[in-house]
Length: 90
Image (cartoon, rainbow, N blue to C red):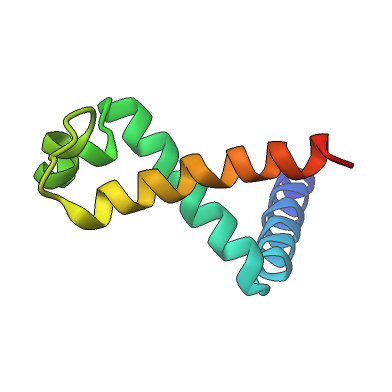
């Protein structure tokens, strides 16, 4: 009986010490936080579009009057064309 208490308390103390050491770094806490949020959203079957109606409306429906969005798409298209032309001419 005493041996079981000793083993249990030793395991608990070891787990607490290891957890304190691991979560002492900000990087590890951030990893846990993001992993928790990702798992929670998968369980709830949520996406970012569920929380931001603008994204849900915007996806796949380009507005011709949205100058900023259209210029971004234009710049992206031109970047790939320019990259191809520069590398093929070498």
